[in-house]
Image 1: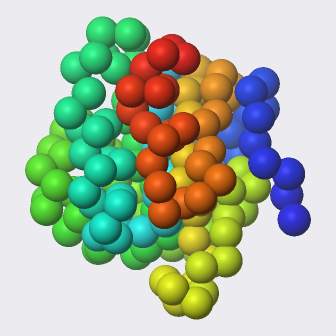
Image 2: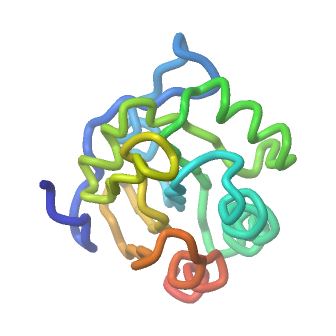
Amino acid sequence: MTSQVKPGDRLPQVTLFDGAPNKPVRIDELCAGKSVVIVGVPGAFTPTCHSSHLPGFVADFDKLKAKGVDLVICVAVNDPFVMAAWAGALGSGDKVLMLADSRAEFAKALGMDIDLTAVLGSVRCRRFSMHVVDNVVKSVNAEEDSSKVDASSSCRLLTKI
């Protein structure tokens, strides 16, 4: 098991997907030279992710931009089509880039994987938020209980940027 990502660590060289399997995105290339917020969630359309966690980042987008954030990314262990549909349902538009971690490679590389086979059918991503500058992790806020939103909320992350 990989140890959990911490401030000072670099983002892994992992490929995620933007809306379709033929749209690969290397997370380290995407975040190079930028101030980025990455939000990890257990799954698209799951109640807590859909009703409170990600909507907070959509609502606080302008506040994040005012603090110098160039890009907000949401990552979930789902297929890219589901992530694209979720973006449409949330109305996240150009505020949050929704990326699919189809095989949980990003979650595992960060040490943020959690076995939720009993409830969601597979290994998923723990609920977290992090601030990254030029691929270097500046802060990480992970939930002990991925069914709740507290430490990883947008308002908490705003205090650490």
